[in-house]
Image 1 (cartoon, rainbow, N blue to C red):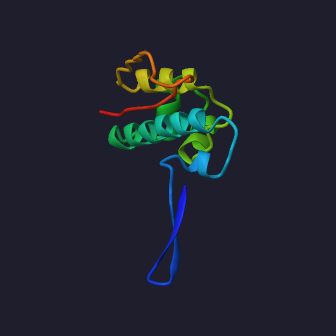
Image 2 (cartoon, rainbow, N blue to C red):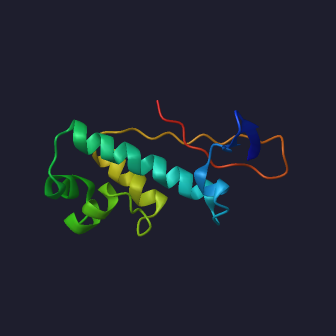
Image 3 (cartoon, one colour):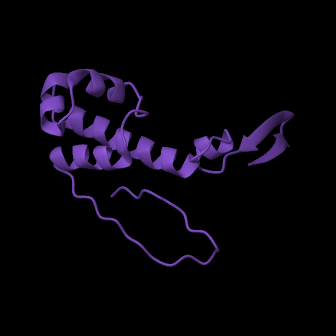
Length: 111
């Protein structure tokens, strides 16, 4: 993050990952999970599913669907979120490639 003054107002530029900006552990993982959750929410709305119908399709109980649609993905793994998207009609492609740095990064690209 970078802070600067614009017209007398302090402006902080984000890193692109709010979880990293908040210095949370596993920030990249949280960003990926939040991206998956956003796509699940879009799919449920696009398909006009009730929470019960969405739960049946995704293999989740309705209370977990309710939590997920409210932004709580803490009790679901990335794998479970990807499985839910598959069940809602999404293909998921994982790309692995060498990185230029000593440690790689986890990212989510949505088409």
